[in-house]
Length: 332
Image (cartoon, rainbow, N blue to C red; front, side, top):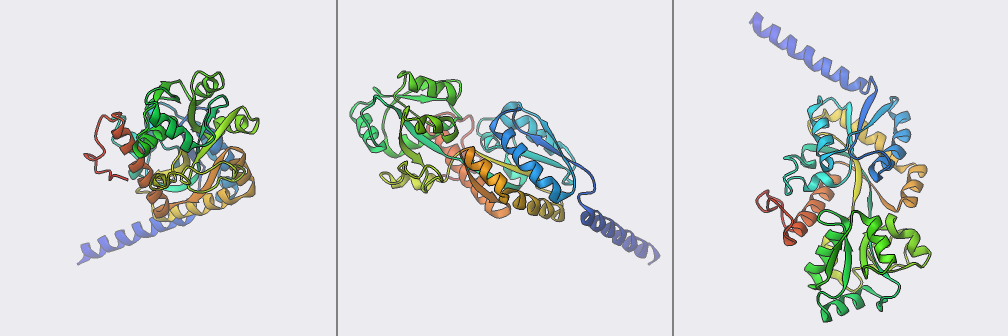
């Protein structure tokens, strides 16, 4: 009896201590681990949101860049730290394809989405000397001349490659992929007439579109993008694309899935307020990124859909090392 009473007292004390710690969270500075290097898109988004969140938390978020392994180094680092809510992962979309590429056994199923801050949108642009004035005209021409039209790409994993795979799955058009080391070189090649068209992120081509140096044929979106409403939506002529959308690179902040719920809620509230700040909204608009500001179940649903679409596009293109079906990733 006495032993049972002691155990009960110890249990209650432990619960009280955990509750007290949760109530005081955060009682020290946090560490923010950025998945990519300094100056990249993820780094820019992270450094734009962090100063707006720190005053709400009342603590500093000490940022470090930990690139490598296409994001696998940073995810493993955060996962190896205690589940106390003091280590944040500022990441992008890459972990959602780690398992099919055998880069890691982890993806965002192992982390809790504090906030998906924003997502990029692709746009299909063509060289000004090409005869097409719409994406539909490009598709019809490619169907008549299989293999003759050259598309700029970035190889498996990039936005151009994935949008190209989506397009092929819907239109069955046959074009020749010309790979480049990034969207920048691909767009340069487009301007020089070395390729005929390229799907690219808005950030990479927005100024070229505004200056009239390229033709914007279609926005890879089912809804208009603020500031670029005059570009036709890809779903206008090909509504089949809607099942894949919204799709594009995205940026957010995560903690380990088993961090205490009270700590998660503190972080969710802080980042929700920070992401809604007009300064951050203006940053996203200038950065060519659509605001999302979602967390929890809503964010998990977005992540699962993104993973389904992307992994199966890789599978159709023969770029996977492990089939998404084997990993239990459903078809889109």
